[in-house]
Length: 113
Length: 115
Image (tube, rainbow over all chains, first blue to last red; front, side, top):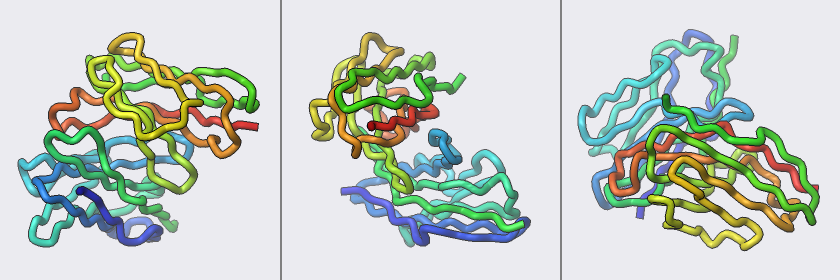
């Protein structure tokens, strides 16, 4: 079985501060991991993905994530938060041969001016 | 072009109405998905089509009826819905089901309200 746990349903950061959103996964087979962002009343947009190549993955809008097998983690970071980063962020996992993505419960990021 | 389009954007329907949601992608993807998303929750998978055949039905009530007329189009027919069916309905597509690395691309969703 596969699952992801997102620690912290709400995260608040000041504008210009480091963004760190946590995701831990559980998988009995090599995972593929994704981060999606959802702005209010919109669909999900892919930020980045890990598919067993480089462990440090760079995505859009200055976000990056590092796959750490020993910690079963795939945390999302951005060096400097911008007001436009305020949104809901979902971590998701799947594996070869799977038919679906398994989503975490989401983390709402608030950016304080 | 990585766009998935959905129509309508908003839909209000009574419990006795019949309506349809539409989804379209022109990325050559062979897998398409319907999700239901309630407020402050992650998307919940409803149906998966692979090569225009229904691959997964996540025990969805029969008042939701999916249809895949061709590889670019996906419909969701709605009939006799309940107020608790009010939600954001998301369509997604991916290159193929056979490779797990294939990310899903999502449409903007249809906001459905059942009165």
